[in-house]
Image (cartoon, rainbow, N blue to C red):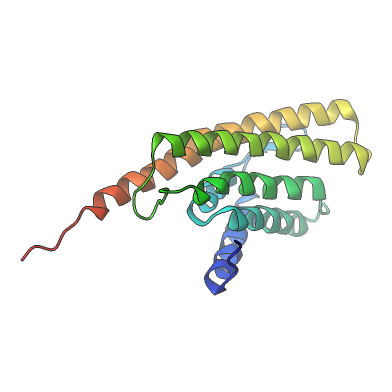
Length: 182
């Protein structure tokens, strides 16, 4: 069930603004492709708040980056950020997964990695296909761009995003065992 309350709307707004602002930070690695730390933030918010927040954060945040940068909105790539956030947020729906309570099993970690990687691959296959079909971009350019985007986003997701989530879980697990003694 989709829960669209005030807390969720505010979270989406703040997360999208942060993702949009971090969209300007990156290391160029190929044609219109950068290694972006914003993907780690997308991973964190998606796992903490779920697929709706993840999709909305990625979609709105990427759209904001494109609008502010002035190069026009590239809808396929905007959608790709939403798709990544959606898939990275699926772990939030798993039973007995709670970053807040320090609950995370090996299954949850594997599930986050698998769904996150599926989301990354689907996102950039979609973006490249959209650019070829709708925007008239050359197929060979899009192969390179999508391949580099998959590779760089996987590095940030696996190297920063997932370890950060695990760090939050560990920190909250220690705090959840506190007891008040008489």
